[in-house]
Length: 387
Image (cartoon, rainbow, N blue to C red; front, side, top):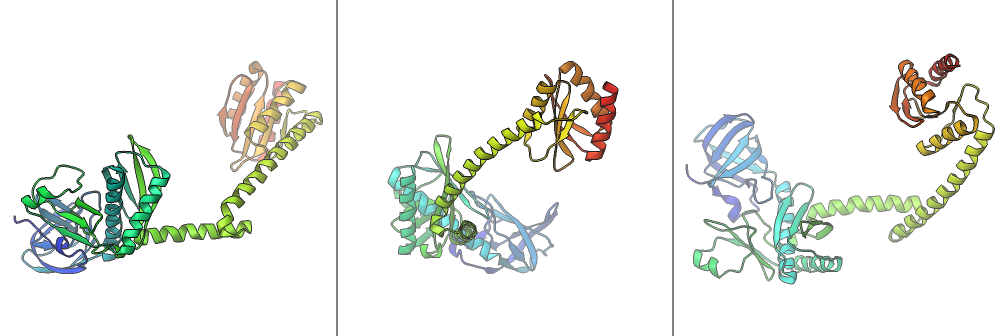
């Protein structure tokens, strides 16, 4: 079968086209359809495929093998018929903005710092770029500024298939050794790179290039980036969050970080005060304890506080002592006692109540999924039996 003519190679902005159906076969996921030509970009090079419609049928996947592009369509198309294809062009354009922005950034990183792009992934939210070396914060800021200056200058993009003689003379970037016809994406005064994907015609279409995050990776660095609408959506989301925080803290938007630091300091001071008060409360509860049945219900305690209280009651009054605290499902508990006494008592408690938990060395902790009346009823019977 003849290779598919790639309409996106010569016109990345083509939204609709007509083509002839060369093959259509039913498959598990739909109908595998081959056209004589297509504007649908197949998955490859770290970029997802285009989606859209063929004669109204949904194109859900596009793949390429040996130059033949296969579309997965949810309706059958008759071989030999002319069909009309429509791309989800907003999605395609989002990809173009981000992929073109990646080329600008990678070209700048390579020319300024000598690092190679060894990995690229584009999805419907963001882009990741992997480089074989590290960059510090100031270097990344510099790359971002220069990349955006290319957008402001509206540098031009040019795509072409050079002949072998011309190709040998080109100093172009490529992540791997390539065979056959090699498509070049050249960005005016910025970068020359081998690439099969559709790109913008001029950098002004990208809108903005924003480097968002980094992480170290196998001796290099991974950059998370968003361009165009992705970057605008990201800004709107973060602006909304900053606005809400600003309003809650009654601070100017540009001062929210400092306001959060001040709030955190106040919270830390409050935690220290609360901890001291809870310690005094624990001492008071132990001193005034009159629980003949060996347990109390005390809300507002965390696990450590509950354990300390139960242990304090046991050491002060002896015997098995339990503290129950209201939890989302039932009651959290800490029970302390001499292991020889506690193990058997706790085993019987688990047989009569819906208990999740355990422990050793004289401490049992967990959750009992029952109401207060049920817990006290069962505990009291076991307590009497123990005596």
